[in-house]
Every structure is written in structure tokens, then in C-alpha cells.
Image (tube, rainbow, N blue to C red; front, side, top):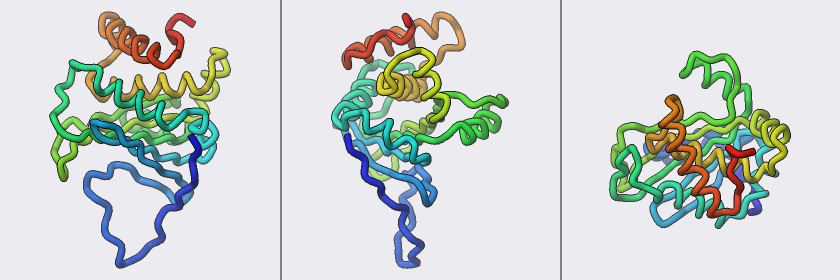
Length: 199
């Protein structure tokens, strides 16, 4: 997949306001693209330009397919409404992840992925927003290096992991973790990604 930079629109008083269903916020250095799939679309915001090379490791159709298969791998713990589903993936940095972790989880350290389910499934113009997934650049790159796994594999794993959180899966309890991990392993195997929990 080749990513081209799309600059944030300049301030124009005649420009329409963002649609209320758009849960992605770009800064002036951000990049943005949309992956459409049969059941909906995923908006990808690269708030840190270091992510460009990482996402270029992933074929666009592969990203489309893994998102679609994850959402379509139900039944899930959350009942997904009929209609077009949207999800936002925000690729950021550790400083941002620290802030989010502190604000929402009372933790001071950065983390690799955070998921924020919409929770309402309010229909907006025929679409239902599943939620937002945030990715931390430094942590994810460091984990891939430490575990000696391809960055592509780790990134796709965390996208699957994040989407499953939006669909109600968790890993706080052992039995919950087993269900979630089994689903992750099955989905990743479809893309020739080895079991990340056996490494």
C-alpha cells in the first residue's frame, strides 16, 4: 500500500462543518485515508508521520480484508446493528497514549493500543460508529523489535485486537482472555500471521 500525504484543509469559512459521524480529528501534520469494505469503512489517521513507512508495509486490500473479517467474525459479545459500520483508527505516539491512558485508565505509562467503543450505536446518516482505536508508535515498534516479529504482523495483530475490544471482548479475566486470544489467532492465521501468543 502506498500512502500519499493528504494535508488538512485550510480554514475556509465557506467549507462545510465536519459531519457529526466523523470521530477522527487531524492536526495540521496528519495524514488520512479511508478503507472501504462491504460492511462499512475505516478511517485511518496518521497523526505521527513516522507511521507512514509502517502502513506502507501493509497492502491496502489486506488491511481492508482483515478489518472486514474481524467485524464479520461474529457473533460477538456486542450486538452489531444491521447497516454500514464505521471505525476510526488513529495512529499516534507514546506521548499521546500516555495522556489517554492517564485520562481514561488512571495509568501513567504509554501502551500499544487503546480502544474506545462508541457504546451508543446511534445511527447517523445510515451509518453506525463502532468506536475509535489509538495506536502508539514507539511502543509498537519497540515491541516488534524486542519480540523479533515483523512490524507488519504486530500492527495487524493490534488492529484486530483493538477492533475486538470495540466488539465487547476483553482480557481482564482468564476465560475472557482465552476467548479473545483464540479469535485473534484464528483471524491472524487467515493472513499467514503466526500465533502472537506462542512467541
